Image (cartoon, rainbow, N blue to C red; front, side):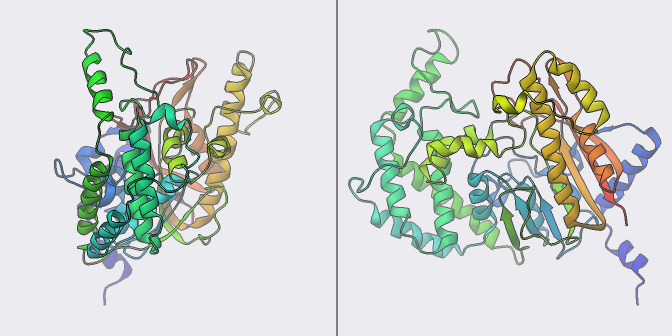
Length: 451
């Protein structure tokens, strides 16, 4: 009979050797180690990663990162893997593909919808039948009122908004919740592309024909895009996207086994369905300080799908960690984080910009609450992988990885390694505030919870 040590050796992979090598290098150097997760865990070029691409989502985590760690013995088949800021479910899908169970949390209802659609296996034959039913129910004209879409006429040409409502009305009677979520996620994936929003930006900014002078390299492209939207076949766009997503689901359901999605909760600071010490590995990319406006980026989708009203968008934004908007009575109060270096930095910023100072404090305090809950769920000897970048605030470096590491250490974690991965395309730059800064590298910090 094999001993535990022998079993551990038997189940080691080539990625464990790479992980140990990085840990040894970090131990020797005692400073962050520059690496490339695209090289550590390369995917096949142009490979369609199953249901990862059923819906665009801003600032998606590079799938190579969770794929690498989930291919090591930091977790085993049947273990629970958790992402407290799961976005559209990149970590959770990679976990399920490796026969781990998955749980997540995200305050954005659109993110939760996409994650559920992405990780719920559905027989493609059922989806084919659902597609036929949907198109058989499409009426010549909408029967009801439009949802409370933010600035509906500003963003959508008349025939586009009419056809989107026809499709929405045809999808709504679908009784099977999993199938309805899949259909709604697919419809949602078409909405931004059918709007007059600039496709190059993550937040909606409306294109205009006179936006660029004649001769500018974007002038003709902008004019042609607006011209095509005036006659776009909305039902045809949806039909094409639906077939693509059914094909993606076919790839998912063709796998012989798949981990189970346990739950997707709405607040990382208050996890209801995840038991204490039940998680072996947590991998997450927390929100950045003022780097991405997730709710604003999702506003058209959220309101079209009825996930919130236009008036509720601000309430959703207020639940986001890293947000920029606060009431005057909040930012006029002097707040401290309990992290000496951070409080010293913020104290100097407060004299110049009270709002930005309060924003930094609120970010760290709310991240502390989320990390306390995450720590509760991780078992002794389990691991937490944080993927996070530094930022600047009012011209001052804001070393987020350092501050979050200090919080984790106060919760009983020890740093096993600190890696640096270069950001190539995370869509982290929207129109950034002049007192914020660019994020070009991400820290990947591996922490182990003390026994």
